[in-house]
Structure formats: structure tokens, C-alpha cells
Image 1 (cartoon, rainbow, N blue to C red):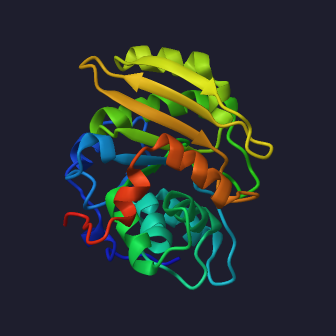
Image 2: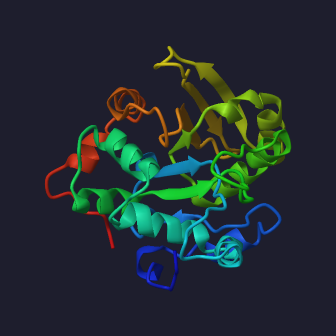
Length: 252
């Protein structure tokens, strides 16, 4: 996964200075699509993944992989390669999530439209040893402070969490919210979809601006994009219609 600066034109870097000021919490800079900032707050969607992980490939040494993961731009490389662009073998994560948001199979142009309009970061800001490794309790506890630091800067109207495990740390969520000047309503459990129970919550900052949080099954495995797409569509009112709108353009 060799990288260059080819992703730069697809990323809005206006937040970078402020994001770097949270260096104690952010190892990787979030992806912010070039259309994100120009959307009204109610249409701004921040997708919250879990983490990156070390991988093996015959063409790359462990030292090379580590150097990629050490780069603060790595999250942006990932989204550009697998979300914004369409490689020969895209990840299940970006493909299934894009289908869930559109509620159908999508074109290459539609996929690019989506990822141009959203922001994305991983709540666990250290790489896992492998794809099978799981974050620790300490990782999830720190993740809430990272989350509130990021939304304070990016000001999304909605956040879509890939994975529900972090909902097990509500005390840490409440404590982090207070430190960052937010109040919380939830998380509220919703009827299970398959073996996963989605949650909903709302966080509100000191100015009274609310951000809706949706917690869904991680799209990388055993994920029905049709079923989860219906849940997302219900709780992101109007978002799918906007994505599918004829002639709708993402601001450049």
C-alpha cells in the first residue's frame, strides 16, 4: 500500500492546525471530504470507525507496514484508496457501509459523492497488532475523549459509529462529555438486528447544538447492508434522499 500525496485534492485541510493541537489524542488526522464543510450542520455526517491494524503482504515488509501506520495521514490514505476511489479489491467495510447509506448497489460516482461529503476517523488511535486483535478497555476509555475533541472541531449533525462495543463504556462517555462541555441523552437500546443491538444517543454542546449518534454493527463482517440500511435511513431522516437527489452536487 505505497502512498503519495495523491489524496490531497480530495481532503479539506482547513481543520488540520486545530486537529494537530489535539496531538495527545489524535495519532491519525481525520478524513474530511471537500464537500463536508459546505453542508448545513444537519447534513454533516461523521463516520466513526474502530482502528487500523498491522497487515501482512508479500510485497511489503513489517518495517514498511509500520512506517505507513506511523504516518498521521494514514486514515486519509485508507479512505481515499477504499472509499473515495474504487480499487480492484475494495474493503468490505467501505463497500457495505456505502451500500447501507444508499440503500442499494451504487455506482463509482455515487461512492465518490458520499465520501466527498463525509468526515471519518477511528476512535481507537493506535494500530492493532492484527485484524483479529481487539481494543482494550483503556483504548475504549480514551476513545471518548478523542471523540468529543473531534466533534468539537468538525461540528457534525450526525455520527455513525461502526461497532457497538464502545457503548459498554457509558460512564467514561459521561465523564468525557463533561470535560468537553457536552450533555448526553442515551445511549438508548433499539430492537436487535440479527445478533447486534443498535443504540441511539444525542450529545449537546454548551451552545445548544445537538449531534445525533447512531451505533450499528461493524460493516466488515456478517453485516446485512439491506437491514442496517433501513435502520440508518430511519434515523438519518432525509440523508439518503439527499444522496440520491437528481443533479445534487457535492460542493467543491
